[in-house]
Every structure is written in structure tokens, then in C-alpha cells.
Image 1 (cartoon, helix red, strand yellow):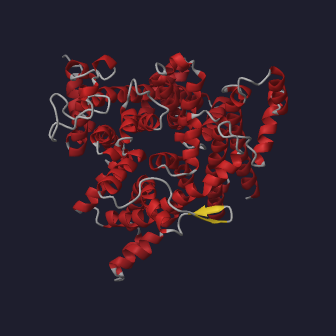
Image 2 (image 1 turned 120 degrees about the vertical axis):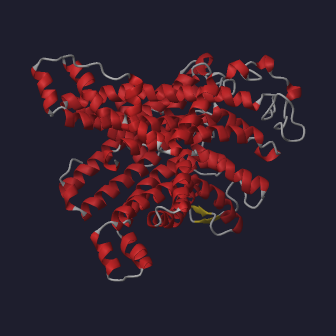
Image 3 (image 1 turned 180 degrees about the vertical axis):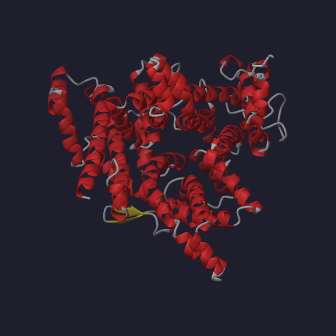
Length: 323
Length: 310
């Protein structure tokens, strides 16, 4: 187990080092940072001094090591665009994205699991086939399209939900939350539905597939034969055996939800990390881009590693497989 | 006594195949195929009948701007689906835009297939360092959300291009971004399948006969690995169109001078609150029809080619 743990963690660390290398290469080879930071009046001597201060005269390897060292301490430098520290910019936006992603995850479970169970139990009914068809459409609709359609219907035509921003927020320490104010909660509705849409179809399809498998097993037949009421067989006996993969997938997908949130955030002008990143991309604000890449990849890799390790704890057979 | 050795014609073979049978017996697949054919043909023949060439600024007239669709009050012939704020005919823009979206989709899937199949075959056939390297690169690429890779590649390559080439090269940059985030899947699938196949007797027989390795890989092994690849390629064609649309929507894809469906949606999105819903809704609908029909076909193909479901 310890060998597996070390192997898995080493693998994760390697991936993060490569991600950091990519982020560093963006820094090093896209544009000249000095050129982007100074204006036309800056003299050559001042430029050289700045170059020296930023450590741009050292060897590339040294610069990379320093970049990694700083990144581990959460120091990604200063934004080219508004001269603020990148980390504080991101920390400011972090709660908005996390609230959005968690809300979307909750919605996808609350809606997706029952739908999956229903379509599995009543497989041949018209509404199951219809839901199955809708789920293909759900997979085919890009998330920005869902966002636009939601805005069009609920904000423009019906005017019942706000389409932009985050509403009023309350700060608790460094964390800001919109969940405690009416306008904050209202603002969360459309973006979280838009973000959860794809996730709902995934959860639904997974639960359906797992349920179909479980319903065929002997213990379900036995429970039925014993006269256990149908709803108990389905929701207590069968569903419980499907939840493991659902939990796994949900945990692993939080990482990609954070990445995909950048699209939803752009559509709804939600002030999260993703919107910050897209603005950074348009302005070629490289420190922000690099920091976002590192942070999102870190969350992604950390979740995957955690899920793998949990699995190995539960199922010893997985420990010997090639990690 | 003569034996008829001529095989039946291609058409008969297709008509007698299991695949054709399953196709004609699944209504959604037939509908999706018809829809997709109509969409592709209409997009590529658009220059013949579209009322306007939306790329030609000389054809845009500002006094034709903001015309609603023809069935609404104020609608005007020939602007069936209305015009945008610059007098661009929405229908023409959609048809030309679909053409770009489809072309980018096809180009990126084909390129990803070539790279993925090539590396997958070599890695699976020879094993060793090539295989390890491929798996490691794959691990790393799969540890970063694909949309992030696509955005970064697209943003960085554009930045590296000289400004004069940025608009012209936009399509190529998009293809590159989609390919870089997508080829690993094919490579892994082919590698896994090849590693199984190369131990089989027919491969050993071919090796004994001193058939060149390249021929064994491409003529003997490759056909046996194609089934899952075909399904993945179909579904990825839909994904590629979506990724392109997303990047263009975010403003790092096709420029407004050569709008793809995603660009049209981005431009139209600004007018969502001004009541001109047609500028954004019709490109959205076209994009959805395109991707839904591709995905329905892919879904059918996956079930039809799955031996477990026969």
C-alpha cells in the first residue's frame, strides 16, 4: 500500500512539474515580459535593471526552478494588466467559482440520480425513451448555448431571474459568499443550472447503466421473491449498489467543472476565476494565465489522485496494477 | 466445372451487411443521417444560392440592418431569417459559418486520427520506450482539462503569429488546438488494441514470412483496431465542432471577418437584451442540429458495432 501511495503521489508530482513547465514556457517564450511591463519613456538602463531584478538573465533551468519554488509558495508574480499580485486576484475570485461549481454538482446529483433510476426501472416506457433522447441532446448542447437559451427565456422573456453578475455578497474572513443574500441566491440560479446541465445527463446515464446491471443480479431477484415492496427494492437495495461509481465520477468531475465553469462564467459575467482567465487571455496577461493553468490542474490532479488512493484503500486488488 | 469466384459488388455487400440492417431499423439514425446530409450539402453549396456573401463587406448595406425574420412584421425578402446590425443576412451567415465549422471539425478529426493511429500502432507494436513515452505524455495531457489545453494552445499560437497572419491563420490555429487536445484518445485506444493483436497467430505468421513491419502494422493489425476508433472519431467530430464553437464564442477562435457558428453566436449574444433574438437564436439552432445529428449517428454506431449488444 505504501509503495502504491508513493508511486501515485510521485506520478501526480511529475504531472504538476510538467504543467509548471508548460506555464513557465508560456512565460518565457510568449512576448517579452519587459516589453509588456514598461512604457516608452523607460530608459535602457532601467529596462536592464528590471530584467536583472526579475531574474531574466539567469539560465533557463534556474529560472524554471525559481518559478516552481515561487509557485509552490503561491507566488505567481504580478499581473501585467493591473499590476496587482496574481495570487490575490485569484483568491478574490476563487469563492465565486467554487460556489458555482458546488451548486452545479448538487443540482446534477439531485436531478440526475432520480432520473437515472426512473429510466432504468421503466426502461420501455415512452418517457424513459424521451429522457434518453433528451440526454443525447443535453450532451450535444455546448454549455454556452444552454446559458444563452436560459438567459433568453428566463431573463429576457420572463424576466424572473438575473442574467449577470453575482448579486450582493457577504464576506466571511477572506471568503465571500452570495448564499446569504436574496440577490446573491437569485444570481446563482441560472449559472448553476447552465453548468449542471451536462453533468445531469452524465449522472443520469451512469445511474441508468449501473441500475440495469444491478437489477439483473440475484439479490434483487431474491428481494423481489421475498415480497419486498418494489420501491424499497429499487431505491434502497439497488440504488445503494450504484452509488459508488456515481460518487467517484462526481468527485473526479469537479475538476473539469471548474475548467468548464469558465464558459458559464463568461456567458453570465460571473466574477469567478474563469472570467478572470478569459480576460487574461484576451489581454495576453501571462502571469494570470499561468497561475490559472497551474491552480486548475492542481485541483484536477489532486482530486484524481485522491480518488485513486481511496479506491486502492477500498479494493486491495488495485494496489498492484500499474499506477 | 467452373466456380464463380467473383465477389458480389460493393453495393450488394453494403446492403447485405449487418451494419446496413441495423441502420435501416433505427429510425433516429436514419433521421440523423438525412439531417446531417442536408446540413452539409446546404453548407457547401451555399455560394450557389445564398442571397449574400457574408464575407464580402461590399455586399453589406447598413440600411438593411436589423431586419427581423420574414414571418414577423417588417420582415423583407430575401432575408428569410432577418439580418444583424451590420446588414448581414443571417441565413447566409449561418450557411457560410457551418461550412467553416464543418471543415474545422473534419480537419481536426482527420489530423488527430493520423497522429493518434500512427503513434498508437508504433507504441503498441514495438512497446518499450516509445510505449512508455506515449503513455506518460497521455497521462499528462489527460490530467489537464481538454478545454483548457485548447484555449491555451489557441491563445498562445495566435500570440506567436505575426498580426497580419492572425485572421488568415485562425482556422489552422483552431485545428491545431483541437488536435493537440484530442489525439491522445485515439493513440491510447489503438495502442491497447495493437498490444493485444500483435501476439496473435496471424501476426506471428506474417512476421515469419518477413512481411515488413510497416505492412503488418497498417494492413494486418490496423483493420482489426478500427471499430472503436470509428465510433470515437464520429463522436469526436461532434466534439470538435463544439470546441471550435466554444473557442470562437470566447473570442479566441474565428475572427468576425470569417465568422464560424461560434463567432456568430458571440456577436449575436450582445443583442440578446435588445429584442433582436434572431441574431443569436438561429446560429444556436444550427449548431445544435449539426452536433445532435452527429451525436445520434455516433450513438447508433457505438451500439451497432458493439458485439455485446448483438
